[in-house]
Image (cartoon, rainbow, N blue to C red):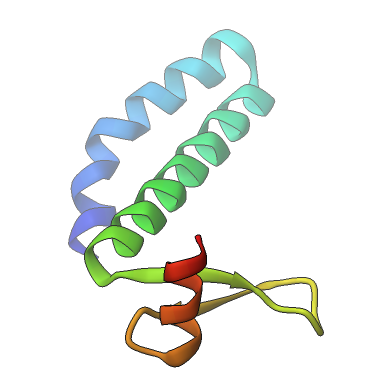
Length: 80
């Protein structure tokens, strides 16, 4: 909650200015880009600090997040 309320005074004028100059579509695109960038950075940080390994799941088209202490995580860390 603190992050959302703390960043709003910084991001709102920027998004408002982009919307004023280029239109609402560009302000939505900029917001989506910012969210995507934060998600990628958070994932990389979590992978590094929590020693997570991403292992492709064979039965379903999504990735399974396995801790390095798990037997599958150890095998993934050694192979890759």
